[in-house]
Image (cartoon, rainbow, N blue to C red; front, top):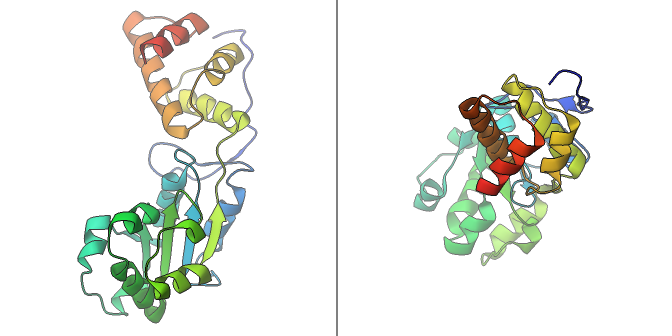
Length: 225
C-alpha cells in the first residue's frame, strides 16, 4: 500500500528452513544459542520446552538441517528398534517427548539415551513443560533427564508476532500498513501457527476479491476464521 507506514523488522533473521525464516527475539534467544553451540553441548541431550505455538518445532527443524538429525516418531520410539551405539552416534530428535512419556513405556527413551551417549551422539527433545515436570516412572530415565541441559522458549510477545506477520506477508510479496498489523495483533492468538493461518487466509481473500489488504478485509477474514 503506497504511503502506508511500514513496520521495521528489528530482529535477526535465521537462515530459511522450510517456509519461513526463524526470527530471533528475547523469548527464544537462549534456545537458539544452544542450537548454535551444537555439537559442543556439555551433555549428549538438550530439552527445549515451551507453550504450544512458541516455535519449538521450527527450531527443531533448524537443528535437523544443521546436524542432519533423524526425527524419531513416537511409534518408532515405542517399537524400540534395535540400534547399536555406533549407529546412534549421529543426531536425533524426539518431539513432544512429554506427550510420549504420558502414554508410552519409558524404557525405549531410556535405551535411546544410553545408545546416543555410548555412540557419542546428540539428542534433542521438545516438550511443553520443563523435563522436571514430565511423567517419568523409570528412575534411571529420570536421572538421564535431570542430567540433560534444558532451555525454555517463552510465548511470543506482541513485538515478535507483529514482526512475524510482516515477514509472512513479505514472503508472499504483500505490503501491509501498520494499522493492518495492529488490528490483527489485538485480536489473534499469540502463536506462529495462528499467524501463518491468518496471513494465508487474508492473501486468499485479497486475491479472490481483487482487493488491497486493509483493516476491513482483515476484519472480514478474522470473523470468518
